[in-house]
Image 1 (cartoon, rainbow, N blue to C red):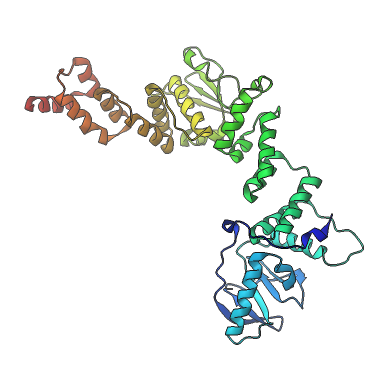
Image 2 (image 1 turned 90 degrees about the horizontal axis):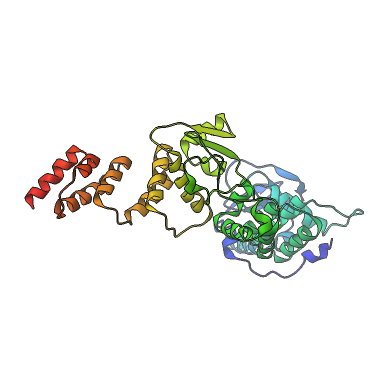
Length: 408
C-alpha cells in the first residue's frame, strides 16, 4: 500500500459535488483554552473525537455528531477545505483576531466517513512499527470525502486500492460508481450484468434504474444462453382464455403470484407494491395474492402488465392498443395507482375515440372534462343516436343530446 501516493497537487473536481456551506460569518469562541474562529457553528456542544484531539491542531472540523481537532496541513490537501481555511484566516485578520488561532469549519454530514479518512491520512504520515491495515469501508469513506472535498490524489489512491484489494459485489460497485462518478467502473459492471448467467434480482433492478435495465435486458434477450434464465415480464401459469397474452408473458423469475378470477400471473413485488390494495394483501401473504371480482377481469390485468412492465424499464415514447390503455386504468383505479392511471388517461386523450366510447370511459373513470366535447360532437353529427348508443350513454345523456340536436 503506497501511502506516499496521497501527497500531490490538486485539480478541481465537479463543483456539483462540493459542500456549499457558506463560510462568511465569523464569531469568537473558545475550546480547550485556545481561541477559536468559528464558521457558522451553532447548536449544542459536541464531543471531541478521542483519536483526533490533537492539542496542537489548528483546525476544528465540526461534523453533525462530533468534533475533530486536526492539523491544517492535512485538511489543506482538500481544495475545498484549503479555500475555507484561507478565507477564515483573512476574515480573522480583518476582524482583529490573531490569524494563528484555531479555525472551526462545520460540515453538514455525520462523522463516520471522516473518521475513516483521517485514520488513513494520519497513517500515511505518522511512523508505525506495523503496516496499517484498512478494510474496504475505510477506502469507500476516503473515496467519498476525497470526491466531495476535492483531493484527487486520495481519490485515485482509494479507487486503486478498492480495485486491487477487494472483491465487492457487482451491485455495490455499481452504486459507488453512480454515487462517485466512477465511469470506468460503471461500464465494466454493466457488461458483467449483461453476460452473467444469474438473473437480475429485484433489488439490483431497482438500483440499476429503468434506462440501464432496458439496455441490459435488451442485450440478454439476444443471447440464447441467457433467455431461459431471465425475463422481466410476468408469465401466465394458467391461461385458459387469454391466449393473446402467451407470447408476451414467457417464463421468468417472478417473486410473487397473483391469481385473478382463477387465472394466475407470475410477476414482481416491486411493481405490485405500487398498487395500494395488492400491497396490503402482500403484507398478509407475501408470496401469493388472490383477487376475485366481477368488475375486473384477468384480461384487464394481462393488458395492464404490458404497460406496467414497459414503464418500469424504459421512459417511452410508447404506442399501446386502445384496449390496453382502457384495461390498465381500470386496474389502476380500483387498486389506487394514481400515476399509472394518469399516464393512461393522457394517452387515451390523444386517441381518436368515437364520442360514445369517450362518454362510456368518462362515466367509468370519472372524467367530467370529457363529457361536454362528446355531447357537442354527438349533437352536431348527421347520424341520429341509435338505440344501442342510447343504452351505453344512459337516458339522461340521451335527453341532453336530443335537446342539442333539436336546436341545430
